[in-house]
Each structure stands twice: as structure tokens, then as C-alpha cells.
Image (cartoon, rainbow, N blue to C red; front, side):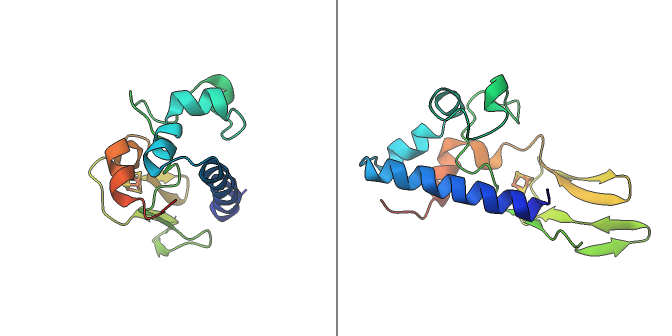
Length: 132
Ligand code: SF4
């Protein structure tokens, strides 16, 4: 599965869940709370394959999953540019200090494994444009 395919599937699932919560009259604050990892594991176990193992994608105490797909992640499945033998496929638009470019074979990918930026509740509150 390409990143684009994953993102399309994920975005549909994410929208369907938010729409369902809005129908239940959840406020924006309540929706953000709902996306806390512990709650999602309990209430939405099919949402992410890691929930089945109660496993976090990042080792963060308070992990919020609302921005699972980080708004700063830029990618092109066909490649953004080539650097010698290497092809770059993704990067971070804000050059977060917590992320880095990783080399995997002949590919360069943005490695977000140590980045907490989009998973903090305060960040989600600040960047969420949706209005219930
Ligand atoms: S490094 Fe952090 S801010 Fe940048 S794309 Fe990855 S998760 Fe988002």
C-alpha cells in the first residue's frame, strides 16, 4: 500500500468517526478528548491496527491520535527529488527538531518516530479548524 492509499483510507475513517461524534453532539473539546489513545483503544479498536495490541506508534505518555496523519508531513509516492542514487519521498514542512530524514535502502523518508508535535492535545486544539 502506498502512503497516498493509506492516507485516503485513513482520512475516510477519520471523517466518518468525527461525523458520528458530531451527530452525538460532542463538542470540539470532547472530540479531541475522544481521540486520546487509551479511549480509542477501548472504543474504536478497529480504527488502527496497533490498537489491537494496545501498542502506541510513539512512546509518549499522553498520546492523542487525532492528527495521526501529521499535517506537516509532505510526501510524493513517485518521489520528490533524487540525490545521487537516493530518492527522497517525504519531508517535514516545519523541519521539526524531533523528526529526521532517514535512509532506507535507496529511499529517503521522513522519520517521525521520535516526534511528539502533532500528538499533544494542545497542538490539536490550536490547529483544529473543524467547527461542530
Ligand atoms: S517530524 Fe513531526 S511535525 Fe514533522 S512531519 Fe513528522 S510528525 Fe509531523
